[in-house]
Length: 100
Image 1 (cartoon, rainbow, N blue to C red):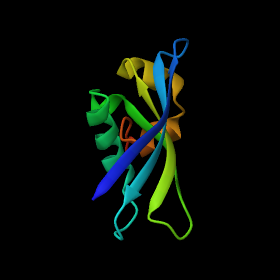
Image 2: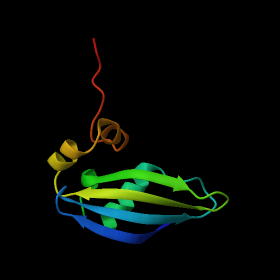
Image 3: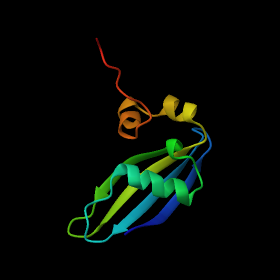
């Protein structure tokens, strides 16, 4: 079972997003995937999943917990404008186009 503790929430008015620091505690299973963390954060903040960008999650050595940082944007357009491409790819907001 995955449990998340929100340690800090900051409203960034200029970039139109919430910045969230969190700690994920889980059982002796594997580290939760980015997608499941996005889902948990979106449920906790009642936001659409596509507006949540998980920036980083760092595994605590020898502990079944991770510390991370995520952002919730007001709109998908703002996320596309302010986030670098690699973050958009990691979080599934952008997909690579196949060259023919």
